[in-house]
Image (cartoon, rainbow, N blue to C red):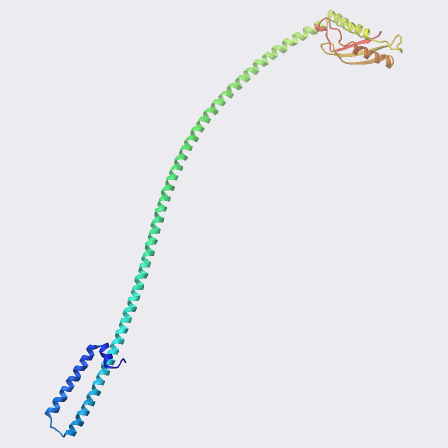
Length: 295
């Protein structure tokens, strides 16, 4: 059914339809009254007027209905615009509410993060404060230990200095003692050496030394093998180096009046004579023995 029909009007706005129907009924009622109380014209004239009245009434009703329709359409349009505005406003309000809710949640999250961070910072600060206190305590303990160690080292250093001073004094005293002993010993040795020198230079010691050299000379002569080229009048000065046991360490000949064979025979004789005879007295012993070998 079309929008402009009677049923369409009834469907969309029943109240307006009934108002329009009442208006038309009222108009019809007035027309009837006017016809009844007026002079009665001819039948043909009345029929024409009735037809005209009906036509006029139908046009009026249609006009009224059109006005009502336009009014209703304006109302509907205005209502639609109002509802659209309300919907837009509600949508904007809802968006604002959602944004506000989102902002609120973000703020709550930020506040929670800040609170968590603040608690973490407080714990970190407490831990750092605790660590600092422990470090200061350890530092104080180390300082006390250092001072105690310095005092201990100072005592040890003082004791060491006292001991070194004592040792130095003892060393000096010992050196002085040893110096005096050495001086006394040197004096004693000097006196003994002088005495020994006098003894060795005495005629008796010279005689004993001469006898000791002759004893070695005879011992070497016993070991000598005369070479074929030897002749009467040959001789050599023999120089022998020996140790305390009489072992010959070296032998050389010097100022010889002989040939090479004689010299070598003398040296061989000295080596065969090792070890040399013991001295008659320890004072007579001499490391170097010199004599003229003249067979």
